[in-house]
Amino acid sequence: MTTSQDDLLPGTRRALLHRIAVAQAEGRAPSLVAAVVRGGRAVWHGARSSVDGHGPDENVQYRIGSITKTFTAVLVLRLRDEGALDLGDPLEKHLPGTGAGEATIAELLAHTGGLAAESPAPWWERTPGSLRPELRDVLGEQPLLHPVGRRFHYSNPGYSLLGALVEELRGASWEDVLRREVLDPLGLDRTSAQPQAPHAGGWAVHPWADALLPEPAEDLARMASAGQLWSTTGDLARFAVFLDNGDDRVLSAESVREMRTPAAPAEAADVVDGSAYGLGLQMQHRHGRLLIGHSGSLPGFLANLSICLEDDVAAVVLANCTSGPLLSAVGADLVRIVAEAEPRIPEPWRPLPEVDAEAMELAGQWYWGTHGFALRLTADGGASLEPLAGSGRRSRFRPNGDGTWTGLEGYYAGELLRPVRRPDGSLTHLDLGSFVFTRQPYDESGSVPGGVDPEGWRGIR
Image 1 (cartoon, helix red, strand yellow):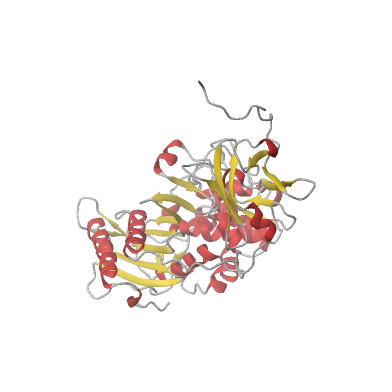
Image 2: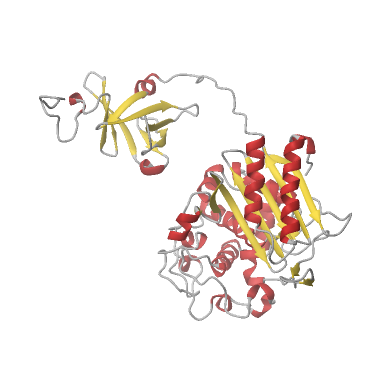
């Protein structure tokens, strides 16, 4: 990936370098490499290393651990889009005999399948995958720890099942399917299941001494689809662009947007922490921004991918140590530095190319009871409904081509907005999922449920 270091201002570049330098020094990482993406491409790359003159670049591989899960989720969504499965299907329908077949595919993607967090001992991340040759070796005798679908419980074996599902339906290995269907189309030539030179070595750093211990790099076999991949900041920068925009060769923008939608019930601690989980993607609220992406770790390596769609900034951070710098915080800071120092410049305002007279009639002020709302036509041909003041229910709507509109988000997602007209064709009110919106508060001409007192509005003497 060609990266021009002149894409950002000198002060911004120095602030980014300072942040990763502090992270590498205070986190005592043998090396740390990072990249920032904006406008659909990498605009900055930085690295710090304990080896003089050997700073890694955007082509040096690191293990990325659980970021692998996002790649596996893409493969599953591709199968759904082709009609090979439905996310509501129980796993048993496509992969019988696992002992965890009552969990749906969507629940496995969102870590709500009730499965254990880890496979049975010995610790799978630090032992050969050949010790767990079959799915039953990954799941153990009692795969389910919680009621299916009731709570978020992060599960590595759950993504092992999804990898096996991909293999079953494709008739090929997870690695081969991933290369053919995702890595090659997106040009991720430096992402692989096995390390390819140049790559970093994984290290453990002693907690009470500045000393190193090499970590083994095991082939995870059945657990590969949960955390096997090696990649680079260059490739993950490209992957971040895909997770923002989609790519019809791999997965549509609509399906990628579905991956970014919270799909798991959040526990109380998650609500306080501002985190959620979608379909193979994590969501975190940091510095007033919503970041989507994933973190990853395996013995000897840490990884983080953080994307802020609103600011059009993404960050990739990789390090070769078992523990040390908190890369999710580093990634969030890199996004914040660019977003605050060089805020996104909006596109110029332009009028609609054409005006739909019927849609134009809907625009303006409406009341649900006494609550004031504004309905606006948007540049993409849709509409938005939001409170005139304060907080409240809001949504975007898409036209259905027959005069009705369907809600796209929030309380009104999937609900039908229907303009109601008099016999002469004039507009009387809007019906939104049985709620009546009128031009005036409790307008008696708008078929307000329960009717309107005939004496109208009054004061108290």
